[in-house]
Image 1 (cartoon, rainbow, N blue to C red):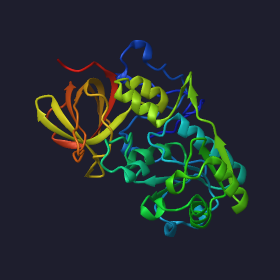
Image 2 (cartoon, helix red, strand yellow; image 1 turned 60 degrees about the vertical axis):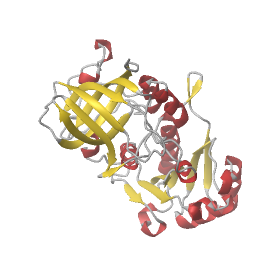
Image 3 (tube, one colour; image 1 turned 180 degrees about the horizontal axis):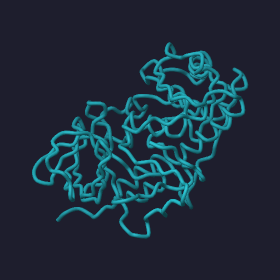
Image 4 (cartoon, helix red, strand yellow; image 1 turned 180 degrees about the vertical axis):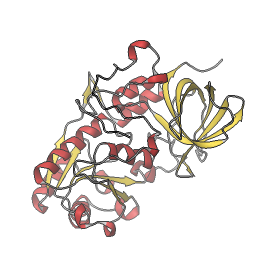
Length: 340
């Protein structure tokens, strides 16, 4: 895979569909000029890892004991980063500027499971992305260290002061943290951004608080993107997320040109991924090995207790029906309503 010449920030405009994913001729990207480097598109999670601004690959750290010397004194963005939308990217870009200023690594601190899922395990699934998709998107943004900390009862019971001292200072040894203005932390979400600023002055780490990013008159947030998907508006969701919503999983041949995709991550079914509005969609299907196909998808409703994975029935146009089981990624493009 060759390199890429970048003339504009990745997060400046949403990713436009290309090739078979274009629904109108006007949406096709312009042809590259002579001399431009154009990479060959490949399967998203088989793509060769991109190097960050330090020339290294992203490290995944899941506990304080795994922290290496090169991971210390990082400038880190803190949050859940579900969907890694433009608002998240603005926070990461600010953390990157601090990392370049101080000469340290760029980090992202997140939690697994999602705190909302921890406190309400029987609520309707709401996750936009699984762990692997989130990590891949963060790696593409040039993050040096992903601190994916376990959110358990002990973490949930920390006061704001203990969180700042035991996690930010003693545990991860962060130099500077960047958060959004709606950031809350500590037991019962008692800590606010003002609390974090005060603790930073006391304990000796820098804090930057960013206002929420807006597109026109609407805030860009994971909640707004979920609401767009629940309303059957995948293109509205794409404008906030920077790319079309994807559901990764295992593709199984049913008959003829019909397939069924079961949401999975690393061989394990995912029951916590949200389901978009039920109905028919125009979709793109990206298969392992880089083959891209067009088709339609039928998405239904899951009922409580939500212990089954999201499943999608697919009809593929011009696909190879001899395929039986393989990993695939479904990209939601347009909603066509519910069948009568």
